[in-house]
Figure 1 (cartoon, one colour):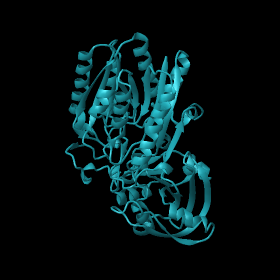
Figure 2 (figure 1 turned 120 degrees about the vertical axis):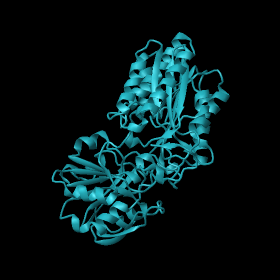
Figure 3 (figure 1 turned 180 degrees about the vertical axis):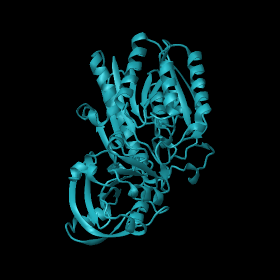
Figure 4 (figure 1 turned 90 degrees about the horizontal axis):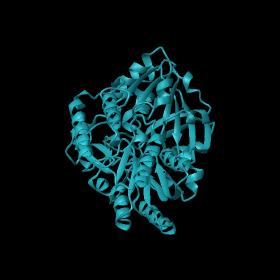
Length: 472
């Protein structure tokens, strides 16, 4: 049997004015995906399953991914979608689509990319089943549910089951095809928005809600149960929490289980809260600077690029270089980092030279302004990561600042290693994140979350939504 595989994976923040374009997106086409599958872990899970089985022919189409950012450029999305369908025409008859989608990718002027793509697949291949893996923060639309046969979403946040989710959706597709049955999928919505930092899956109440999913999946009839929490930094009509259940053949059981999960979420929604001390930015920094242990991590949560912020908010930099500089007391501070291609270009011309440098405030003009720093660009790295980013390490009297030429995330120590930094010896490490990734959580002696203003404001009531949701 022939399986078409592809993926469009992006978390799009509608409060971010940046339009995510070609230069921000990594694309693998056709056979490239097999040699680059480790760069797209959800797709790797799909591929690994079918290659282990050895009973299917895989036809890779287009795989695209990007760091969360603003909405995707319409023309570039349409070009990638055109290639997706063009490659399909080169393939033999397709028995199923098995896709790696995010669920909260949005395109300027179109809206939900998943709805648009799945509707076109169903229009052109009306009798071919569609199966898709999703991010836990997918925003499920009616069109998505009407067009796909089954969805499976991550069960962990931070997301450490990405490969497993891809593997699982491939397993469901295999089950459906082998048994020649149409899977029965149901969903139930909860009209609320919740920040990911209040729904980490090793903390209550999310931990017990995930346990409910595992309990349901022990039933012989139920193949999969998922919570999709929606994406709170997208102002979208069909956003919100969704429970999804996939059954072998019993639609009534799927419907009942989805409603049960939605009701369980409603029962517990008043229990959600932040898992680490979460304070206004100045207070978070003051508390961090008081600590004797190291390294102390502080998340600049309002400007988290892995949730689609601009990554150029300067509030933390302003506080440390102005208001709080007398409280630093010679502590070593690393800030990771800021997205500013103009600052990178100026540093490249003045390496090892003391200069005045404006940083940030180019894209986020609502919550901050550029900050003038005096310091020395002491190190430069080219070609970092999939986007071939240039990194600059800029040293001021108060801190070391990583400046990036591309909009990227700050999720692990690879950036520090590339720049020759031992972050474990720093007194204070400030990262543009929300909850800490697993690696940073292990590294942190103490951690705080700064409730900074920005495109990923954790205090959802401070954002200007067009639609009415209960904000948690």
